[in-house]
Image 1 (cartoon, helix red, strand yellow):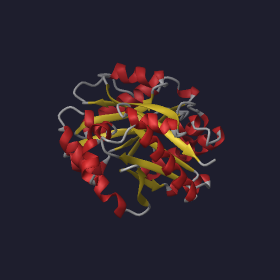
Image 2 (cartoon, helix red, strand yellow; image 1 turned 120 degrees about the vertical axis):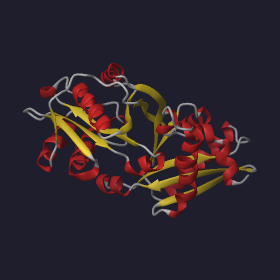
Image 3 (cartoon, one colour; image 1 turned 90 degrees about the vertical axis):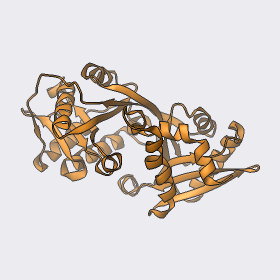
Image 4 (cartoon, helix red, strand yellow; image 1 turned 30 degrees about the vertical axis):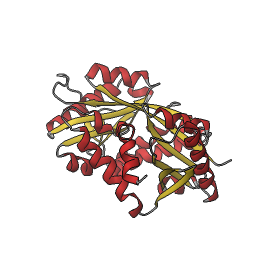
Length: 310
């Protein structure tokens, strides 16, 4: 079976993992063409991106994965992300499980020490195969969207974080641990490593990694929310949008997540965005409640799974 036929057989499962697939007003076929098919075609041409095939009987299962240089440098251990698994309709669970086991051995043979993937909830056969092959589910994600048609009337005093706030933002992220996020739920990482990684990531959001970081216009600074405008994807979709990349709230700013999220909606609406997106863990009841109160809708569910070298 040709690669294009395998991708076509997996269209609904692969599309379900794309956050834009559920946005009203966007054609699912166009989203699949832009964010699945085109990216799979271009995958092998990018640095650090690899395609590896496993033979199971007369069938082939194709694994597309990439190295994670930033993560590898930070943790000092070779890390990768499995981007997609492609196979035909004739591949059943035992064969797919055997293929995942072969891929896991390939990772170990190439000195990888950790690999993770994100799989949509409807992709039940792949989820079962990964589990049978020893991959652990470390996080379940809820993907919300907001059309920005109706936003809260009440405003909240916030400001844009500056480079001078980077260390404070680092502290907030590193000292307000979320045990359900994938870095803290994955036993590959120690809790302290998860804290340090998220602190580093949070500081980077202020220093240019994201487009905007909002903080309360009050002291002490003990909360933040980072926003990306997703510029490359927005150009492909033909509309402006924004995504909450990371947020954390400390005890001294208790209750500030909802005001920061509300101001995010205001900001995105004022810049002409069509959608706001947010992802959180299924265990994060506080964020889920705030999303529901502010008018977000659930667009999809995915699971994060990981493998580690023995």
